[in-house]
Each structure stands twice: as structure tokens, then as C-alpha cells.
Length: 435
Ligand SMILES: Cc1ncc(COP(=O)(O)O)c(C=O)c1O
Ligand SMILES: N[C@@H](CCCC[NH3+])C(=O)O
Image (cartoon, rainbow, N blue to C red; front, side, top):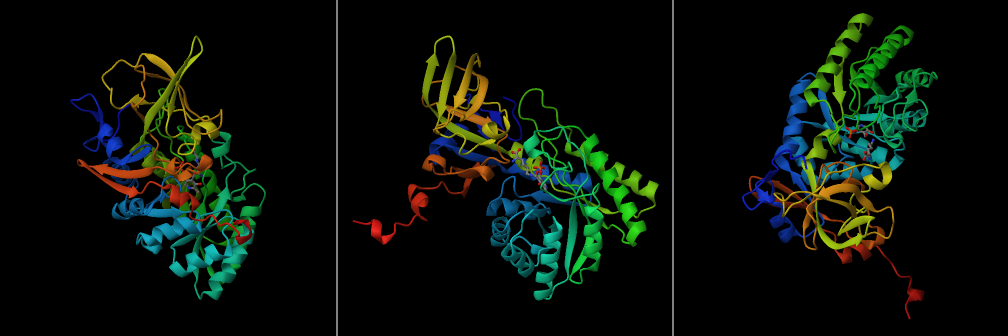
């Protein structure tokens, strides 16, 4: 297993994170357990902020991992925050995140969510379609506000990533396509909307991308279009938001560019593109989620049954599964793993790690080499900070795991483990069903 952030092997041969043994964490807080390495989360925020500089903005994409404590870290590190629902907005506000630093996303914001954003005074709405443009203009008028917006466009770029997380192509539920003329129609409508101020343009081409060229291409296409818009309407782009998408290392063979290389590629392309088109240099915005939160998270499980089907496979069953990490089932995502209590032993046995859900597809890792596992071992799966807890669920009525923030030998619960009582909290039995 590739160690990252504050992960080390301690004198007892155990995995340590943030100065604490993973085995001790599992004992104290139970498993499955999400562990967030505070130093690495903060370092990723800082690297983004420094690489993009004070004239640009780094907006953390809350969909990757959000809870109130994470909002505090993002705020302290001076980043902006992308929320994509009323629930994410509520979480940010509950954590005291400054509303002016919030970007409100979503391809189907409900009127109540829009009102919630207007009332809170969010900095930007990223408007996804013409219906939302009309609705937001009306609701902003009702609220007596002139709302600053970006318009989300689909630039027609195919990023080489899983089809479920590709978003830049024309046939996408997100954004207004440039190629069909709907983007220009949206801009004209925005410019005529009395309660909206169009500040800039947004696109997001997909996620877990290793190649920098699609990001460069997105910047060129967007600024090429901004040049055409200026000729057609006189409107000049102030802010160019290129979304998120930088990939991270999950398994051997993954080779993501560094945050600094990604920033340099984007900033250089933007400078070239505006020079060619005689446009003023816009503020550049990026919205990283996975590349900030992903590497900072690690999940700990306890090994239960170990089942050998002779000549076929060794199944290692853990006490979590697709409930806390749906990515292998949904995107064929791959992960490394190690036995946190036996880090110095040779990982010589090929195993299949299975979860505890009633689904044959609940396989967390199809093939990973471990020391021959026994019940009670602690299995650590790294790089689970993004789109794991955020996509967790209660299938089979499994309570969601706890999350702890670790650093400097300290571990603090930032999301409590769900209890069985939490599972029935919203259940209701109609009177007639009581005997
Ligand atoms: C609009 C938008 N911004 C940012 C992100 C974050 O992307 P990533 O986690 O790949 O950096 C997403 C999700 O992919 C998104 O849809
Ligand atoms: N949930 C996806 C990423 C989606 C990004 C949201 N726009 C994943 O785990 O890879």
C-alpha cells in the first residue's frame, strides 16, 4: 500500500495516521471508521491556493466530502465552497461558513433551495439551464437582490474517464451546450434579466482526469466562446470557472499530475487564450473535490469471516462494504489495502475483499495481496476521502460509520456513528397497524 500524508508504520508494525495507531483508532471508535488526515487535507488546500495565487479562486467541491468540521477546515484555509443542494448549503451555514464565499451549484435547484441561497446571501449561483435562469431572476427580484451568477456551459469536450463521471460532452444533463446555440441564448437572457448580474462562465468536464490537455482545451473553448460573445453582445467575461476534475492515485499505474502542474497548465493556457483574443485576463476559478479530500481519507474495517473456495478464491469479509463505499460497484473503482495491524508482514496472499451487504456485487476489492488474513485483523483502505462517506447509504439498515479527524496524536469525532435508533427515527407506524 502506497503511504501518503502522515501515514507511517510504527514500531509495533502497525499503520499510524496523524500520529495515532490505526489499530488504536479502530479499538476506540469501532469499525467501519473513516479517518481524515487533517494535515494532508489542509496541505492540499494550501497547495491549491498557492498554485492559483491571490488573483484566482479555489472553490472546494463539497460533494466530495462535507460535514460541519470539514467546512471549518475549508474556511480556515481560505478556500471558497461549492455546494450543490439545500442540504450542503445548510451544512455550510451551520458551520458558520461565510455565505459570500459560497458557489451554489445544481442542475435542478428547487424554488425553496433558491430562496434559501438568496436569503443566506451566497456569493454566486451557477445557473445550469434556461428554466433556472428565469426562476432565479424572479426569486431574486422577490428577495430584492441583484444576484451574481455564472452560467454553466457544456463545451463539448470528451474527457477520458468513466462514462458516469463525464460531464463536458454535449449530451449531458448539465449546462447549456455551446455548439447548439443554447449557451449564447442563455447569455442573452441573463443580460436581459434585471435581477441577475452575469459575472462569468463555468464548465466542468469530468472527474478523475489525469491528462492535462482536456483542461487546457476546455479553457481555450470557453475563452474562444467568450470572445464570440463579446462581439455578439458586448459582454466581457470577468470570471472563468473550469470546475474540478483532477485525478488522484488509487492503484499502481495511476499517475496524476501534481496540483502545481495542473494550475500552471490552466493559468498558462488562459493567458495565451486571452492574449490571442484581446480579452482582459479573467479571474480563474477551479473547484477541486477529489484531489483535496480523496487522499486525506482512509477507511478501517474489521475482518470477519475468511472463506477459501479451494482453487478459486479467498474471500475476506469486512464489516462495511458498498454502504460506505459504492464506488467499486458503481464505477468499477479500484483500491489498494493493507492489514493495519500487520504492516511488516509480506502481503503474499491474493484475496477478494467482500462487504456485508446482500448483493453479490458488494465486492470492495477484487484482487489485493495481503498477509493471510484472520478474523479480527484491521483492513485499511486508503484514498477513501472523496465520494465515499458522501455517497454512503443505509441499505440493509446498516448504520453509517463514524468519521474522525486525526492529527498530532489527536483523534476527534467529526461525524458520530449512526445508531440503530437513528435508523428508525423517521419511521412512522400508522395507528391502524398497532394491535
Ligand atoms: C460542478 C462540479 N464542480 C466540481 C466537481 C468536483 O470534481 P472533482 O471531485 O473531480 O474535483 C464536480 C464533480 O465532479 C462538479 O460537478
Ligand atoms: N462520485 C464520482 C464523482 C462524481 C463527481 C461529481 N460531479 C466518483 O466517485 O468518482
